[in-house]
Length: 420
Ligand SMILES: *Cc1c(COP(=O)(O)O)cnc(C)c1O
Image (cartoon, rainbow, N blue to C red; front, side, top):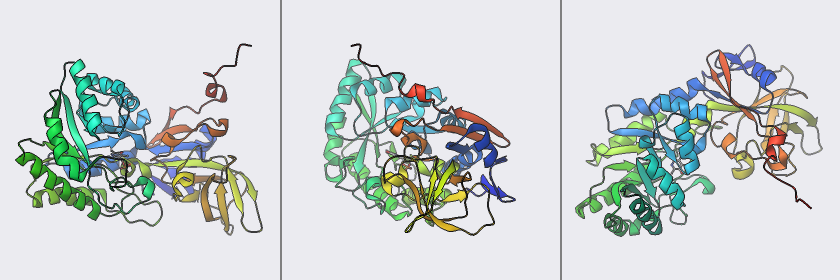
């Protein structure tokens, strides 16, 4: 939990200067609440550590793509990392610049490439030879040269959950390390591509620096080979993936992480190289919570259940990755705690938000699911025809709705029944 943005005052959880309970009363539950201050401080930790170096921060939009969240970063001068043309549209709508935006993703369509080229994105992070050919064709049809970086798979173990580990050989992402040098030669020979960089992204929720240092070493080895082949590489993009504290993890501090990586470039004689970062989770994860109300308490022989009004459709991470989120009372009770599984109303046994949690709660109480700012709302769905939660941004004493709660009638407004 971000200590100063989310804190208790006389037993009542506050988000900056606003009591969480009053937000739930005013806007209903389930409710995503973000802190502008927490977003700002996380971004500044990256930006400050980059100061004085040719290093830039590209916010990974997929972690939290709410326009107000993106706008907070855009105002701070951030670049962005997108994985679809939909995310490009969001960046532009939020006041971000295409020229500060890199386009990642393993399956970009020709239509997406066209939109991104026309908008003038900074770089395409390309993941395969067929994609290079496709991009070359699209650029040719527009009479442009597409700026290209190759995502190389450095085959390092990020020591994280298999679903969020992306830098191993066995994984669908990137060009195999052993094929990279030849692939660069191919890219170089394509008339409508402009080779400008190299990138990797080794996974997510990484809590150690060593996998990054291994990845940087491998990328720099390649850069040296590629440049000896007569191409020049302007930037090295180290991806995102820095972890946060959900439970008792101890990831490196953002500033220390950035400084350690940049020092490593220097140590390798690449201190002048441009470095890109693509953080997602570490910017937004601990800047958001999900507020939910206890509908029923259901004591059982083996387990007690606290059935809440948020569910796997609102926050998929526990069901999807068995992810842990701390769950705390919005108003602390003096009563003694019992062990509960905190579950939602969706008709799936996988619909749980926390297991074996010690809580002093009663029916009608509010709970806060912490660290919900990353891969929270963006992964939400309408499963069970549940309208998605509202999103709120707190800024000091003020709270603003930054996404209205959906209404059920919207959910099937674009459906139709057969005429006969
Ligand atoms: C998801 C992703 C990121 C952000 O990852 P986090 O773990 O949220 O920091 C960065 N770059 C790429 C290419 C990604 O796919």
